[in-house]
Image (tube, rainbow, N blue to C red):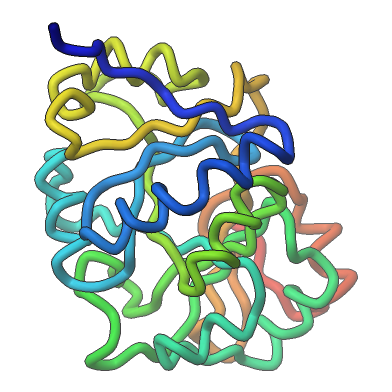
Length: 223
């Protein structure tokens, strides 16, 4: 008799610690992971080419919509040859970890094209979700991130929703689901393009332009 697919408890310190070994093994097999974040549940995996291709296939992601990277420390940027501009450094020093996504230059020949946006940069956020940050630090490298949802449906706020909508992928072990409980709705991260001479808001979110200017006075708000 087959055991029905289930989510892996990922709430208490003990649950997080118990999940690390098998979750990291899953990532090392270039498979997709579903996990809680500060806002909604996300899908992701390693930042290597094979892992990204598997994520694209699972999500049926259209071209031109890049994934972002989640990190658990700025030291992880060097592994992909991503560069912190002076403005990005100032913003990160004040607002990371937290709901701020920075679009950074670099990563040539190190970052799959699916992670690079139309402006040529790579979107990165240092997650403030404690359990997820612990996993990323244990994994030792950034992981990719995109919302966990079918096309046309809202992002999942619970592991139960993912099990319902992605039952076959979980049953076939293409997708491992970490259950961090039901998440409360919250604003998305603010996205700032740090590719040019002046940082520029390209998506408003949890941190206002006025607040961001405390760290980057030349910041250009969204039109």
